[in-house]
Image (cartoon, rainbow, N blue to C red; front, top):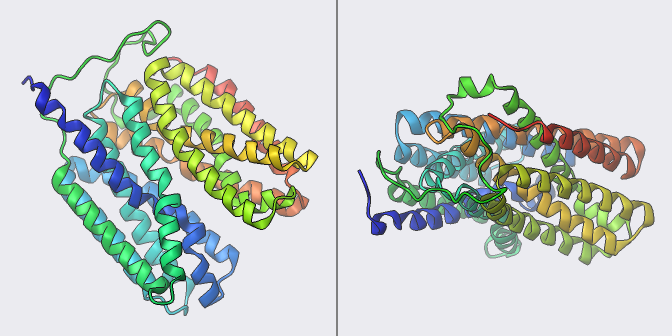
Length: 408
């Protein structure tokens, strides 16, 4: 069934709705902001609160897998409504914590909110991506930019609300849960998959661009995970994401350690977040223009540069080099989720994209574990040299893996 241009143009509305929904759903990356009142009121330690973020990311990844299954069996609308309900319940229960047990935080924010947002993330990305087979990179980049920018936009709004005596953190958490639920439910009634047989513009074939010389077909999840290329790309993305994941976890303290004032250090965390968002959409545009291979290699070079420049700033105690390192790190980290989405669509097709993408998305969990290893090195060595030597080595290994990713 051939659709006319007017019906095809609706995909840009779906893309805008997807970006708006993910802008709010991405608040789980703003945990460093949201945890402040919990630590102040209940006295929970940094380790206890750090574990909550780890659990949130684990359930986020599991939610992505659940989202793929639910969307396939029940449809997009029921899956997104369930995501909204779980996310809202998670934030509402967090708002009612009494500090008696940190396990309740893990159950409310970590399990419920993490699971709900993970479902929404996968369903929105897979649904909107299905409308852009000719612009995989641009679509993925725009969606990921919305998700990545949440910590800056929604996080700062939450910080202001939590600090307002007339609002407070409990009301702010509850309000966020309700707003997120409303946005996801509205998205559920707007977003839909393209009808079968709909014709889309063909991807542009440019010299050195998107074509890689293999026949494109749809791979099932079982077929995908049996391909050695998948695991090489998976590990490559784990190592690349670990650079940004690690630096984000201690960006403020790192800046202070090289001589930045506290105010500047806090600002640099926001700058890193901005570069993270810009990196996501820029990577998408580059993916569509230069193709998968050049985009992944370019992202790898940026990751190596991020680790090297930041390590040099530690050696020299240079604030300008630290600023440059954090900016490059933001771009590097932003490229990873966009590449994950666009890579799965380009290599393994659109038919099973939701499940395939959820499997690839587990690279975030593995990257967070490497960030924990880096934090242990930081504690044991008493400085930032050892963690950045590790990150530099990992990005080098990623480059070797990168060169081997040629066919599905």
